[in-house]
Amino acid sequence: LFSFLVFLRYQIYYGYPLQTYLEYPIIIAQDVILLLFILHFNGNKKRALFYAVIFWGGWYVLTLRKWIIDLALNLCTFISAASKLAQLRCLWQTKDSGQVSALTWSMSAYTCA
Image (cartoon, rainbow, N blue to C red):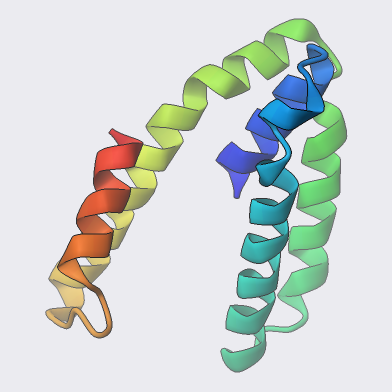
C-alpha cells in the first residue's frame, strides 16, 4: 500500500498525464478494503482509524519537500522486497503455506525484483 501511495503521489506531484497512473487509485482502494477485512476478521477494527490517520498523514507529508517524495520513491523497491522477505519469514516460522500459490507468489516476487 505504501508503494502504491508513493507512486500515485509522485505522479500527481510531477504532473504526469492521468492515463499513466489511473490504475493506482483503484489498487489503493482494493488494498484498503482488504486491510479493513483483515482487521475486521482479526477483531482489530479499532486499528483501522490508526491506519487511516497514517495514510492521510503520509499523503500530505510526501509533498512537503521535493526530496521527501524522491527519497520515498527510491525506497519503494526496498520496502516491497522487505515485505516479501517478511512473508517468507512468516511462512518459514509457521511451516504452513495455507492458501499460498507458488505461481502467484513467484509472479509477485518477480515483479517486485
